[in-house]
Length: 591
Image (cartoon, rainbow, N blue to C red; front, side, top):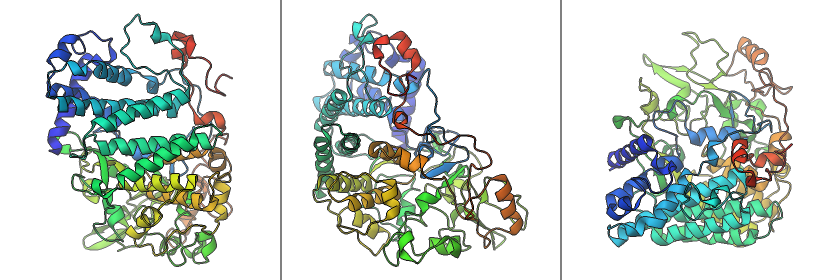
């Protein structure tokens, strides 16, 4: 089944590449009346297949030369620090003359389908199902556009080359977001429940609606825009629908509390996984592999993210527990924490099941150790390095030793969990807390903690963490500390799933997390590195006065200057040249 579906996508993508029919005006051989009047269910399915690789990104295009979009997206956050500075997080991204995200091919193709699919001789239920997929893709593509550009023109019809609406101006965000909800509601109405995890379903449409509504509700709330409660209530109610036992979702627990979270992200097939709502498939046997496990060396978890994992002895933040401090050494500091920490980054301890790529057994002897910081240290036979990290915290999430051990590139088998039940639980909790409704903590946040054996529940009115207060000073829900703790939970649970940038944007905390905080890595540990190695890191990479790695101290040139304009990208200048009605430009980008 897995290979069959990937083959279908490959075939239709080849067709699209050959004639680029979705980028042409309606009336050609594909989208004209002849196509629609003869298109059977297989043809409609193939039409839909075109949009899977365009919108369900996962680990990126098969045979790509990087670690995948889920991880790379985190470079645009304070979770993961890449080898070089990220211009956007420093507020130093420049005006785009062109931007592929302004493309309207998906919208054009979706509108062509919506306006014509009833002409197909396919059975009514088949037409309905594939129309549901198309509504899903149109809603997702528009949501991506609003997240990127804010106001965008809304199109409900196919546009001919002389149609005056080709030169219409941008519609307001409020109007477009209401249309997006209408569109995803239509998808929910038409789609069947999930039968294949790699196929769009009613379940996936509900998850997308909950995600969209949480985003827009909080985006409006933290900018004083009306309608926030309506969107938050939709997010809360929609997540609640997916939590109904009739949908059959539960958290994945195979491997037990010490291993299940890690195991969740290294699976070659999610068809029987109770947590995954929608996945993207990869299969090197048909030249559709990935390189996720082979490309973990150009980045690392930030110290800021590392410090958010709670103490498992007291349930408190590490700044308050009295059990953890950087002087105790990395290995000790990583133990007795929320179990997701050691299932997300490697612990540099020989023989530890969570050491992952840091060690190897050579001729019956375990060799290796802490990661090579930015590749600056010289490896020898007696002092090998098997991993590289920009921060000293080597990420193990999405790392499969089976895939890593293969000699050839593009042989990764692990699929991408694009939508999963854990996100639904977090949406329910956050929307509920923002509205003053029941966040159902035992069913949501505490279920996530219980999965990894964390013994302390999140209760209403939790202790105030000064670190979270400094990151999130403005909270508009009724229980500020509860909302902050749910934000902590979201950061930990969804680490490296390309969600953190969206969270920073919708909460409007870019200044707090990008400007007011130093980008730090781990403290240099004399238990893990020799004196000469530490001196090399100090001189070639950089450390602060407390011994924490500063990945960009010696190599970085960008100054921190994130402002409100950086929450949106500019409307591409080449598009404004073609259509001046797209003005005014987004705030701050017309200077």
